[in-house]
Amino acid sequence: MVRKVTIGGAQMGPIAPDESRDSCVARMIEMLREAASRGCDLVVFPELALTTFFPRYYEEDISRMDHWFETAMPNTATRPLFEAAAAAGIGFYLGYAELTPEGRRFNTSILVDGSGQITGKYRKIHLPGHSEFEPWRAFQHLEKRYFEPGDLGFGVWSQHAGLVGMAICNDRRWPETYRVMGLQGAELIVLGYNTPDTNTSEPEPNHLRMFHNHLVMQANAYMNACWVVGVAKAGVEDGCMLIGGSCIIQPSGEILARAATLEDELIVAVADLDACAAPRRGTFNLGRHRRVEHYGRIVRQAGIEIPADLSAAE
Ligand code: CDT
Image (tube, rainbow, N blue to C red; front, side):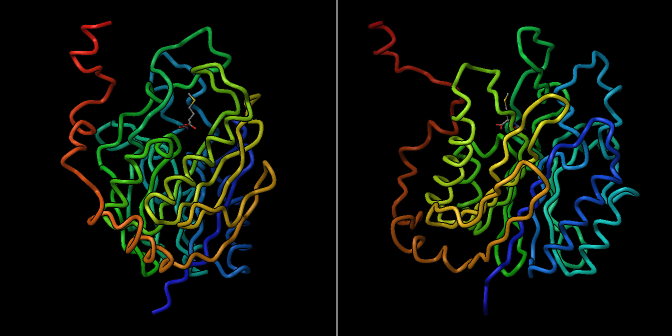
């Protein structure tokens, strides 16, 4: 069986705070049409693709942010996207803010198959930023205020004759994200991101934002012998610059396609899922080479703990 998936990375330019869901969906459908004409099987859209990156806004009363969230999926605004994708036989990944019937808020992504059925859901686990207003920041990043950490773990789903995993933005900086999916056989990991071009958490030269964006995805594609697709929302959103750099990375860690703009832009590459097999028999044969008896610390502790004999000597 041929296991080649033609993947479209549908980078989106900025979404203004007052841009409607309908307008965002129309932009996505436009890229979906191009994806169909270029033979795509799967299209990856960004994180929080239906709204501006609203965690930059502070609200004392969290319920006043509810208008940024979706209470059903699909819904009136997104149904045309599901229908257009199903008509073209294209699956997709979509990021959005989810408000559950119980009133819980998550930064969520879904995987949809070529018939328009939702096959997988993921809720962002690594939430960056802070939960209270921090006046010294150039802009706020309040994901920890508006979202709970995801409660669904890192899963994989059978789609396009392969195993597909999902992550969202900051998750891509953590090796555990990829390894937990890699250990379930993920051959393709898709993720969307909104990354400001300024790191307000610590001082660093701006160029490192793009370097680190690619560094983490390329390294983890290589170390897990899988394809990684990262798709940005890019450009200046309400005065805040978001990096682009959407890319499709093969299991060698090399980038096959990369966005050139900060606008709506479709990048396309053919992903041969069987390209994961050779490194999985060799260097990254996990079952053969991993030494889990020495990895216990990774799940026992989150932060740094200096060994007692060394900290006593300090
Ligand atoms: N959306 C998201 O997760 N963005 C983060 C930036 C965090 S800066 C406080 C990222 O890792 O790209």
